[in-house]
Length: 397
Ligand code: PLP
Image (cartoon, rainbow, N blue to C red):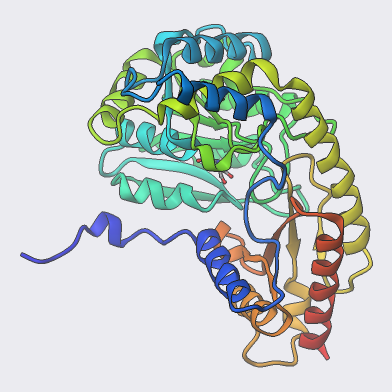
């Protein structure tokens, strides 16, 4: 009688939120913690966006809206998807605006998953994918990638992992946690494999606008996959709007209709004011977005340079996003502390003893790694990596 949902019990809590909460609690006690754990830009939201929100309040734009999102925002999103992503079947009617990319992903998985369905993910993956899949009653199937292959799934690996039960494949480029991007040719090669397999494809493009040279390519632009791709994006990362909670998706009409039903029967529309803000962000912030992108690029070069001098750790130069994913397996093997042999234990030690917050790779399906965010000021980054080097040195000597 009193048993809880097995679907929900099977899912993990968000490790990134948990570490960030612990770091915040330590800071509140007056401890000088360097937190490189949170996944959010450290810039202010662009002024034009804030102004649009304030104007919306003055205009009393404070009531329920169309549950799928205000028409002018859905139109602006559909136009953006045509202009920037070549997703020619995006229409205002097939755009669903949700409370962050997170809710977009959740709505779509709720709309598509049945018990027994397999949802394929490449590890390292974003923390929430497996938990969402489990809560929606399906089974996450993980394809492991390697640092040597820049953490990318090859067409061969994809082909081997597909089964008649594969309902959907989730792609994420640029990736959280690795910052790696698939090139347009690599995406097309995966697309050719998927063209022969009857399944959906979710393309999580939240970090689309934060890339440092590799061109972004949306798999939703491939004609041979028409009617099967769901493209998810949002305002959080590109426009420094994490707290505003606006994301969106577009995809095949029948599926979007069911996702919209999930939203309509749970949260309804995104905050009306935030929708006006999102509209201003899409229409009027090109120079702000470019300023942030350049700054992330500069910081990426700085943190990669610093980390290259720390012995016992390996990392890739990320192509985009604002994360550094560091493989500390060699250092863990050389650990002189019997109670520090995993990256979870290392991250606890780094936080408790060196007051540095990073996220253990276990959360992303990649043991022996740590994710640091470089969405922070130069001094914070330098101090954080100094503490990281000190923690590695203390563990191995
Ligand atoms: N997808 C990826 C890969 C992410 O890293 C995040 C946030 O960290 C999201 C989706 C969801 O972001 P939001 O719900 O803030 O739009």
